Image (cartoon, rainbow, N blue to C red; front, side, top):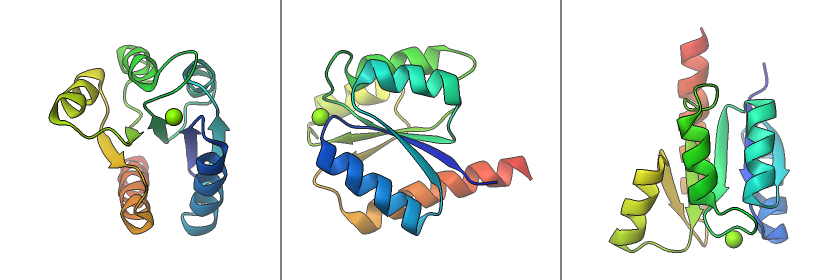
Length: 129
Ligand SMILES: [Mg+2]
């Protein structure tokens, strides 16, 4: 079955880029949300296999949305990768505390991004065998 990936990004350029790239290269089904609250609701309703979450988001930021998802037994096991331009040690610590499983720095290194996404999607499919 096709893997479901949720991309939560307020930049339309990044949303379109990630949507097209992941669908074409990883052959997964990609949903997109433009703010943290919408992303949270879509994750709760759709239970995706992987979430790529921007940190700086309107309405509810990526740290808050991730905290809520990780605290909920239905969504807590979904891997969430942070997409962020902020990479100070303090920020990284805050992201780990919020429950992020990985961090992908912006601007994206497409190869690293695809590698990371594939690792998470493959690990999930192995579990389901
Ligand atoms: Mg942003």
